[in-house]
Amino acid sequence: MTVPALILFFMFVLIPIISGINISFTNWNGYSQNYSYVGMKNYVNLFKDDSVRIAFRNTLIYGFGSTLLQTILGLAFAMLLVNRFLLRGVARTLIYMPAMVAQLIIGYIWYFLVTYERGAINDIVKLFGHAPVDWMSNGIRAVMIIMFINAIEYCGKTMIIFIAGLESIPDMYKEAASIDGANLWQSTIHITLPMLMPAFTTSLVLNVIGGLKMFGLVVALTNGGPGYASHSLSSLINELYFGTQQAGFSAALGMASFIFIMLVSILLRKYLERKEMQYNG
Image 1 (cartoon, rainbow, N blue to C red):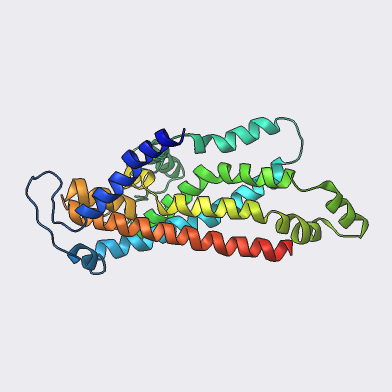
Image 2: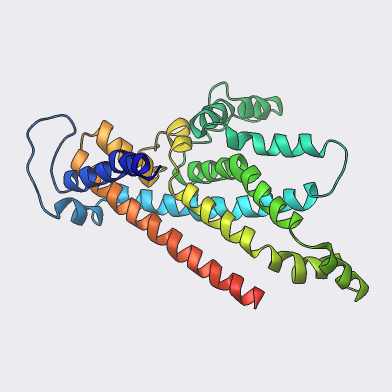
């Protein structure tokens, strides 16, 4: 079993990474047989390019902003749906269902809701006698809308993680707190949330990584527009390679993005694991 796994890892992970590193030091345009090595030029240009700076800022918003909203919504839904009531399973399924759909498809569904002409939201706006709004024409507003949509799509995944955490908390702790006179708020703050730290760690790390890799929603809703105002690093990599035929620069940005996301995930996980030890200690 080990050898086939190593072969697959070598073919589909290691070789592409090595190839990407090699391309990142060239001026290849993505299709020509002729290219030359330019050393560190592509990596130096990453710090000079305005579109990269904008995409990096947006990526931080997509990563950490979406994670904050997903955590709040996911925890709220989990606290509600961990209790037994009629149609609880249906409610859980409906909230989790968007997470099972490809991000690109979710993006196109929302596109027909927010698009300026014949968009469902603008049709509602016009019913109340107001002029339609071009929701995605402003860069910052487009970024915030994409962030919100991402949080809505994946809050169900966060909910499932928190439900698993809540169901693993022994009832005796809550019963002991109740005997000592603790109310619901005190029990939640001093018992439930500290014992959910492993769930917080899993959820936050997964959500941050997912947000920092944002691609499908950006492509479907704005394709990075207006201009480059809503690009994430992932969608900008795609645009540089296929749109402007800067394969070498695109590969350099891909390598930098890979290292950045890996470092963020490692540091975040270590920080959260230390917090777990503090609470458990």
